[in-house]
Image 1 (tube, rainbow, N blue to C red):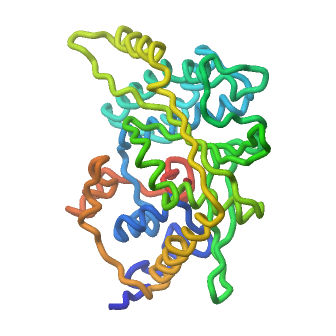
Image 2: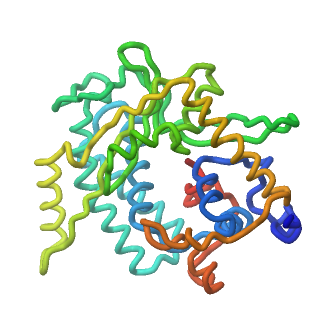
Image 3: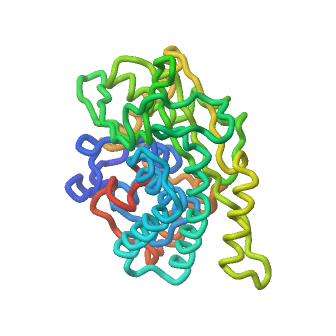
Length: 344
């Protein structure tokens, strides 16, 4: 059954996001693939949950801190990192003025974890910065020269009828190794890592392949692959009657003893034929599908199986299941601050 555009989008002038103007990112496409009703609520109505899962908050804060560290192009110590955490905390408080006590407690925990994690990261990967060496063996490819850091890219997908739409995203980094080969550098703040899954699904991974495709589209050459930079989120729990000071000291001690557990890197290589195959099997039909959805030529439906995933309930769970929107707010830019779900 064909869905009328006016029913779905209530007129494009009322939609926060517009397909032809704003374009798509890998995260936006992932939400569309998961559930079209979630996509409608977040894209068209601009709905966001007031609460944030700890893994998202941890990742957002971690990327912000790493951006500051790499922007300096030299290792940063605990005092400087603590200052950046305070700056991030102030910005977060300004953006979330009605945060609940639970949300503030979670953010404080995130800041505590990064306060003990990031100084050790700076030491573990000191060779990433000019004039420094890696203190431990680094068996993966090493950045010889950074081409871009925290670079927002924007390229175009051209449909068969000649119309084109922006494809956008953010590279954490792009570097050249000692052989002159180009690599995309991407950081993931994960708690569980399964290397075999990363390696075996690389050639179909939506974000990885879109980033490589975009680089090839913009520069005419295919990168050698991805250097996946894992910053593991500590999963430690407070012991009975343990103070915050003792807890974070305990976590700090374990990070120092087990740097290879908390900081890992994986080389994920591709061939030009991998990108061409992915473009044909994944990107082209997906772009046709989301365009058809926007134009009302594709069905709109709810995917019940996407309400709960391995990360827990989806952001729009209550709005979809019971129509309860009390824990949400509305943004006016899906690519703006705290809307970074669609930036990657």
